[in-house]
Length: 327
Length: 262
Image (tube, rainbow over all chains, first blue to last red; front, side, top):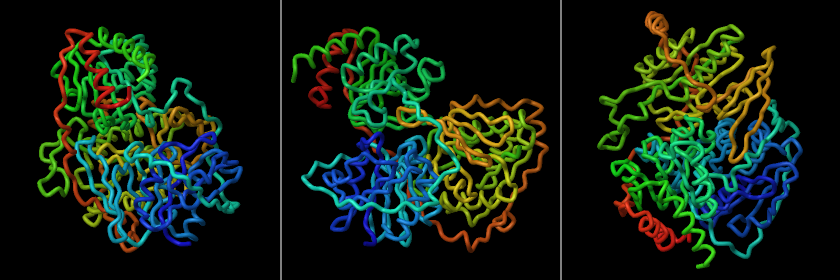
């Protein structure tokens, strides 16, 4: 069956990333009456493949082999190439994760595809794929058109498309042979989980983020407590990372992660353009800063001019009280 | 060790961006153009390896003639030579075409390592690095935050930051890396370095001189149609936090009633 919209499933330890559901929802919309295919690549994949039907997949292609147990760009590319050549999808959506960004350009070259990354909207027009994406530190939004006549690969930002409502529907599952040459010169020696994170920053619904105003590493504990009370994750702007208060994977901004949570609580963050680049796509922005001139207030939906050391502990207590009392 | 570093010239990220009225691009008048920030880290990584293993560091860029200045910045840091491919036929090239041009220049040099920035801060695409790895048929590691090259220079051990995890990857050389900003601290060009860089020739190559057949380069598959300013956020509500309890109440109300997360 040729054509259709494909989604590469992002999964980890048998759990499907939410981003995959967001992409399936978008794929369903782009496909119209056409077919949506999810592609599941891995070792002995413990994912409930049929269950992807609930989010819009008609069919799930499973590429499973020991050589694919740990992600590598080379092995994944080699595994996907014959399948793409044979089934000729029109569009392949890949989530913007560390692996997705690593894979997509390599795959695009080998598959003769056109590629666009960091997509925040997607539409099809007469065989073209039209995407918008933030550029120039989010100071501009670019419209990119992938021209008809070749496979279109779109790497899509997390949390820009909604998770579609679950339907009572199972997908057909088809196991696809993995070509024997699917190997990799690069070898994954180890994947070390960072214990800190309960939810990856890029998938968190609520992010509490700290800046220079925290004054020292010890005060990030205030944010950890607030984040725990809210069920969110902790991030930071660049100065705390540069000062060594928190590791680099906390960083949100041009030189860190791009996030778009439901709620972004910026605490003691002035709001340099490089930080705004990573978070101004958030749905609701709340800022606490003692400087009324801080640029973060330009993007804040709720701006509190005050002392974070006075406000944050009280806020944590108030959130806990409210959660205990129930809705 | 032969190392090639890919360089792009971009507007300073601190610079205000003015979009041309017709949306065809940005107005570069008065905008400070610099070496892409991540490329400084790539150059630094290459220089450190040269200090350890000897060899040469070659900078390669594709862009307008003015991109020579970004290359000169890398030469001033200590790179040995620099090459620029500049051709009007590339003005609408997409990222994969740029990667093809870079591959044509780099392949004959048979480098042990090709190092790129993780992305360039103008278009944020992060496409050229891994695409170039595919074109040169090299193993790749993107967003490298730590790099150790074995004593015999046959392989490298790198760290990559994933979501909530760090991946440790072993690559045989030759290989291509794209680098994160926490890999190293780029050096400032020294005064003698700057003087030396000023005297260095930076050859500017046309497509043909770069070894690219314009026919096989084909047409771009991706076209940047227009740029627009980001949608303005409606002005927010301001709360005076002199009274912290009142401020907390306002935040809780916002979280519960507007954001509906409480």
